[in-house]
Amino acid sequence: MEDSRIVELYLQRDETAIRQSAEKYGSRLRALAYGIVNDTQTAEECENDTYMQAWNSIPPHEPRSYLYAFLARITRHVSLNRCRDNSRLKRSAFLYQLSAEMEQCLPAPDDAACRLDDVALGEAINGFLGELDEEKRNIFIRRYWYLDSIADISKRFALSESKVKTTLLRSRNRLREHLVKEGYTL
Amino acid sequence: MRGNEFLDKMELIDPAYIKAADAKPKKKNVWLKWGAMAACFCLLLAGAFALSDVQQPAAPVPDPDGTTLREPVPEVWPEHPILRPGDEGYIAPEPTPDLAPEDPVSNNGAFLPNNVTELPDIKPHISAYGKMTAPADMAVSNGGVYISQPLRAAMEHYGDTANYHVLIELYSDGVQIPIDGETAWQEMQRLFELGYTYAFETHKKTETDGKPETVIVNYYFTIPFAELALLTDFPASDSLGYHLMLYGEYFGTEQPDTVVFNSVSPAAN
Image 1 (tube, rainbow over the protein chains, first blue to last red):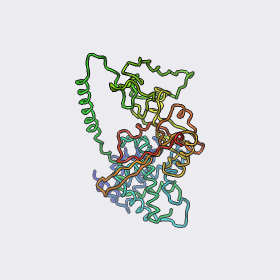
Image 2 (image 1 turned 90 degrees about the vertical axis):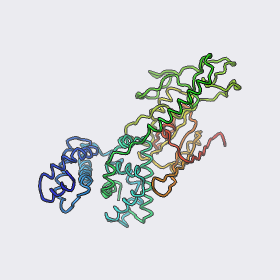
Image 3 (image 1 turned 180 degrees about the vertical axis):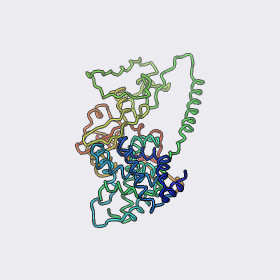
Image 4 (image 1 turned 120 degrees about the horizontal axis):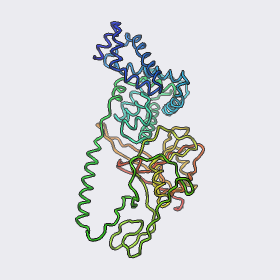
């Protein structure tokens, strides 16, 4: 079923919208959640939470042309929060590593003098991503949006792990330079 | 804002980019490249056979780095630690054959031109050793030294009969640091003072990719001629982690447009 048709079902408060979403995107959402929480049962719970939050947010949102990205964003958010709240999942080292890498992108961590709203920050991040070539952009997003491991990214793009790590390091440096150049202090 | 919060802010990325990153990457046409290389190699072999004297026994064909493999390269590297003489399971390297002076083949089996009877006693230089495996996702902790599997396998195979061309990645608190930064520079100086010859390489590559021409500059920290002992007894700093790998393992067949090689050796000063 087309995304626009599934969104119509949400808007009409037709519960088959959930079933259609699960049929079309369930396995990908579970895989995304599993990559973050590393636990099958928790990943399924995150998937179910995703449908509930999607039901509560459509309307007002109408992601007719980007339903997967909309659902995946919810899944990512839910999964990250589950990781942080549930020490049983033992993902603290994984999140610590990612947070440490993200910190390298920040021009001045903890500087509260100037805080960006999400609109301006989103424009800055997307402006930076638009300057990257396709492969570097996809590698950056696979790491910091999909939260893939270096090994998974290496296999996906048929690159050595060292090459992936160096590409990410340079992208993080360029993002920091971009934010500094645009006058952002975070 | 801290890194944790910034990780959450990645939700602001455009959905079109999210969708694009989820698509299967385009397959690199490696077969065309390898097919062309294989065809050239076959032509060279055919030419060599046509010119050679088939009455004499063939000399061992050396590898491009000047060595001759003593056993086939395994497809999959077994997990093994670095073994030293006296360790259980240690296999001593085969002794170099003692050749007569008039024998045209010398220097560990390297094939020589007719007007050369011997070469200086120089060690083979290893910059690649078989296929690279993909180790588990890792970040080297401070004080740690991680040696890649191909480098470990080469060290066990050749021992101290060869020098190794090594590329080093540096980590601080588990996160990779740039080679053109102050910390990396200081580390290179520290190793120099301990007797290591290091190189700081600048690679320049021009990329277009449908956009205005861009020159990409990358920096690398290498040890061009590392003896075995310099690797097995690597003097790690407490504040840095090290990932050591073979030079060819990292670069494969990638060719930048320009390489500037600045080698700093204690012997030159």
